[in-house]
Length: 142
Image 1 (cartoon, rainbow, N blue to C red):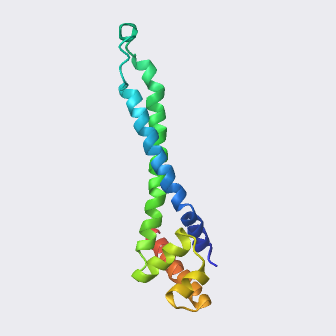
Image 2: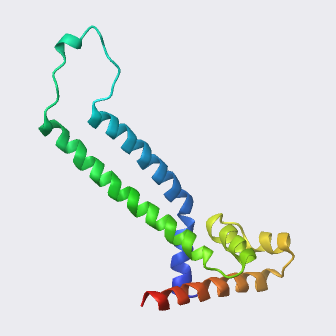
Image 3: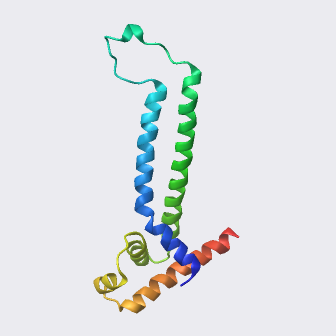
């Protein structure tokens, strides 16, 4: 198999992991933003003791937010790359096949039976279509 295909397959296997990382990072960013904004419930018994935060105490949180945003952007770009590449497949049915094989990690034999194909020709077709898309994409990028 082609190296480009194998690399793309490896990325696709991580798709669901990327989705969960994006969700986790969004949650962390939301919590951090509340912390930066100073949003919290009021403890009326200690209100008189509260000291306002100075700018220096917020700087580490802003740096942490910047790092989380960078990570979020990285994972969103990986998801976009996978989605965009699959959407470049000219045949809608093959988009479904590629998604199920590469992202959902279903077996070629299972899908070939489901869609009424010979297992080996189904595998070759999926690999061939995906390799063509990846090569065309590389030619455009150059």
